[in-house]
Amino acid sequence: MTAGPDDGGAGSGVIAVVAARNEADRIGLCVQSLQPLVDEVVVVDDGSTDGTAGMALAAGAAVIRTPRPRGKGRALEGALRRIPSAGLWLFADADLGGTAGELNALLDRVKQGKADLAIAVFPPTMEGGFGLVKRFAAFGIRGLTGFEAGEALSGQRALTAEALAAVRPLARGFGVETAMTIDAVRAGLRVVELPLGRLAHRPTHRDIRGFAHRGRQGIDIAIALLQRALGVR
Image (tube, rainbow, N blue to C red; front, top):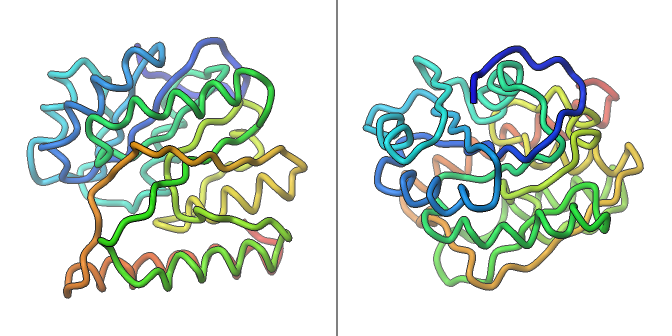
């Protein structure tokens, strides 16, 4: 794929956009698992300090890299402005590794016309935090739209070109998923959540690093919710 300006229209084909930061150990398997599902895999490397970009290129992905971290939402939005248009989009996080192939179920749901935005639900796990940020995001989504989000923070999403246009510009940082769900529901799009029993990603643990990550998530989500409550984006 030759990256170029997004013309804002709906093209053809399917493009996977993979958000990555310091995922050199998983990005290769993630790319390889997605390649059979889509026409092109684009890895958005948000200022990684390891070999993420090189591993992604070696696996056959196109790479758009920021020289320093911009935050997930801004990195993705910046990349979308450089990627040619597609008819269907698949967003994934690099830490899915080899389980990224499970996202084919999301694509099928959208291709079959059963959803405009399909969101993956991870299986229950004993790892991770206490679920406070997830519940906060779900509470905000419900309060602003009435939609009951079971997986408010999932970055694994398939959507049509029209749906993507309706939720752009993407919200900053880790508020991107919460904001996308709100904007999609408000636009009258069909949003569905789909449990994927074998999907797995790298958990954030109950340590200082994990709590710091969830703190950043909470701040970004609060900003996204406030902006949408005030009617600004």
